[in-house]
Image 1 (tube, helix red, strand yellow):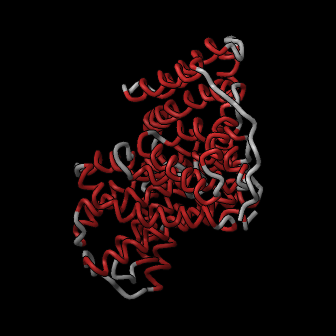
Image 2 (spheres, one colour):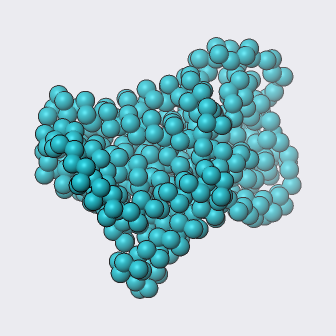
Image 3 (cartoon, helix red, strand yellow):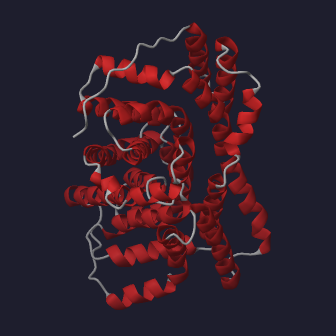
Length: 435
């Protein structure tokens, strides 16, 4: 499948590198904010190695956030918030229920499809999990689902927030690796849908054995048509975002801006949004954006330091000295990404690991786009795996269900999502054929 690995030159790293690295790990374990960890680690490496001048740090901080593509991040977050406040997210769920209601597990599967619809707008898994769980968990429990399972299903479906375009994660990895976000969005369409389908199919299979829900009704075209008509304004938003990006009319950033304006106009026109809502919406968006942007800003000096020390080359050499089996190397990368996803959020994982793993992926012949899809999808599983499992904590916070209860029910979804990740890893055409 991949070409033979080449021979790497002999490289070595000293304690001027390992000392700051150990310090970074200790700070992470102590709960220090990740952007502080990255910043202090970069300064320490620059100081002790002398590989680059310390004055690089100030300039690189501004270069790290001076990106047109990065403007899309707060805009997509704001669009998702407006969607919830205006009730348009409920309309999307009603459309999903009209589509999936003919199944025995119709309500649960419709909830997962609703997560996919919301993912086409917000680009954030946490926003997806919070919005959908508020609306659906009580209804799912009334249908017969155990609360822990219902929470796990929503948490798993919300993983598509970073897997289905538009995705903040793909914008960030494109920024870090210098790859067009529009190209990544195109490549991520099929893999994101496959993850969504895996969660839906898992729910259907679980229901077949557990019989949580048996509310199947015949497909009613009139009801479907009426629901779609009632939800036409909500459906317009993902159409604008994805249609604009895939047709080439908008860049992702321009598409996000148009979506924000359109969603606000719809809310004001329908009377579901008022001017007094704007301060809260902007504050929410700013808080989320304030978590992401400092990490990106601090990542550039770290990336430049690691590149100057030839750390990526050393990492590739260390792995290929251990094994030259391409399949085993892919499994090693998967393990690294899953473990990282369990203990750290997506943004720091992207900015720290992608520059290290990309050279290894290229060494075994993976296309850079294929690598990005593989990496983000593997990290996506981390949203429903302890101890971090961000979606688990978001849904737990909204519903009051314990994280351990949700985690136990999430195991089945983790297994099926892992199968999809392995398929994506070994079948590059699923990520590249649209390109």
